[in-house]
Image 1 (cartoon, rainbow, N blue to C red):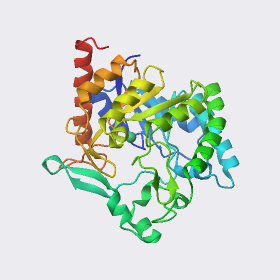
Image 2: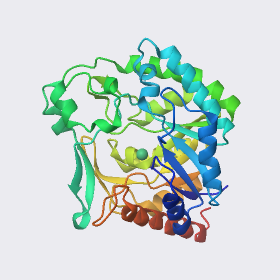
Image 3: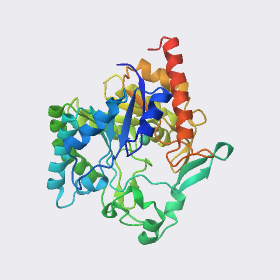
Length: 348
Ligand SMILES: [Mn+2]
């Protein structure tokens, strides 16, 4: 297949979302942490229902991104009880495959995504999210920090462990935990015909709340790739926004595409950007961030990427919905124009 667009980042499959996707010209959808029955794992029949409902609209369910953090937080943190969670995670992978969903996205951030502002003023007064390490560092007390952070993203046990100080869970412990996870998950995914797609850490910093992070720089993705022993089930959900957030900004975007694109290791792309890099960045509209979106689209074609693109986070425009229909329509239209131009230039 060639590069295409999916509409996504919603958790309930409604006719309205399917009609939006069809009207805007997308060929598929993605769902993030769909609201499905099950406190420990998802069942085939519930996943299959999503596929059937999507296909009835003439669209393809390209991927599910993320199970709830509480399905595998003990695995990520290396806590007792991780074996049972891992067995359930593997059964979810099998059920994703049985339902006919080709990609399962995941992250390895036990304490999830952090932002310090959810409505920082952007272009023309649009609302953007922002991360500023200085704000996080201003908290001395972990309870105050927990109250400050949006709790919707994380399970209670997966929130910050400390406000300040050395890591409670070190990077090497996190590598052990990741290896345990991937050693168990990859063979199951291969058998199930499912590609697992790793999302970078957001924000990409070495440690937050006493929990070390892994996927904040290129060399750690290379280490993970090597750990996977050339398994075809190990792929990336390459969030260009997170790569752009990394120290060095747009050069990370280029290096990730050039390293993993030719290997066929990129399942899909979160096509978004930010201004600035860690320790302080703000999200923005495509075209006003750190990288040149036209240059990046041509780079994707030239490096053999043939998956789908997704808008991911977008600015909230005046009169927008909670899901940001207006901001998403801008991002999707922008991507469609870039794809057509890249095809015209025969970059494809
Ligand atoms: Mn992303």
